[in-house]
Length: 398
Image (cartoon, rainbow, N blue to C red; front, side, top):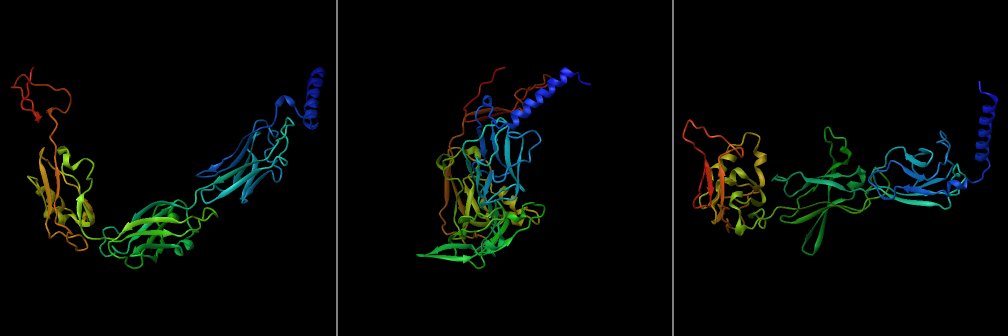
């Protein structure tokens, strides 16, 4: 049991605290009430809360559900709750995280905000503008690349950054291209794609041309402004979903004509990569290719002739990667037999050969060692493999 003097001391302290908390007077020693942070502000990828942080305790411990009506106003109004996260921080927490297509104005009303425990009051209102990403394209892929049956009716897989409303896509997506002075449009066929094992299938869609586009024509796949996202109410701007070109005449070129310089090609890299304007079957192209002087074509032909069953689709490519030894300071010429065809049955538009010149090998000496050191047996004549490049002689001591 407490002794009487001590009980009087405790009772006196409690009365002082009660008086200071109920008198409505400001404790000037705490200083003015300052809003340290209100937001977030501007563009954010995801919104889990809107918080106002103060420099003084605002509510007693445990009274975190005491939030006055109208103190934190949101436009548009959002489902969620307003709570004190701690004595210093008032927050709005949405029922679910917001991930897109919102423009939110948050307003903190000073006249609705209770005084701090010190009695200090906030002098003016505060506001924050918050934006979440609008509907946009995350990635795209041409699905029928190399398919000669559908080459003029392109089909694209488009992955959006948030789930769109399917009905809005069907009425707004179209292919567009130019014919002479006229711009042509063709409504796209739209279908959602369900990918097994994916949690984001609602963002995957296929957009296909319902009828053939003209040959050798650049085109765009466009989504008109106003498409709606299921993540939020803000409409999307006009989006370029994809850009492509229908096939034209078959031509060949070096894939990287300027890097490095074809007039001074490093011979240690092997031949440059050959690029085709249209997909070709490499198994049919390889035997018709000639690189002179002195290039081993047989290994290249065998690589594609020996393809296993089911690998035919992998042979339909726009690039042919060449490999093998080249001579230094040599002019090379690549030709393709006129019998070569792309997957559409088209011959080469031009029989002009491709050329490149190798530069000299750098002088080099390499010992036949896997490590920077080795052992020689004294019981037998010492032997060590030595590879010399562009050196007239090598002096060895030891």
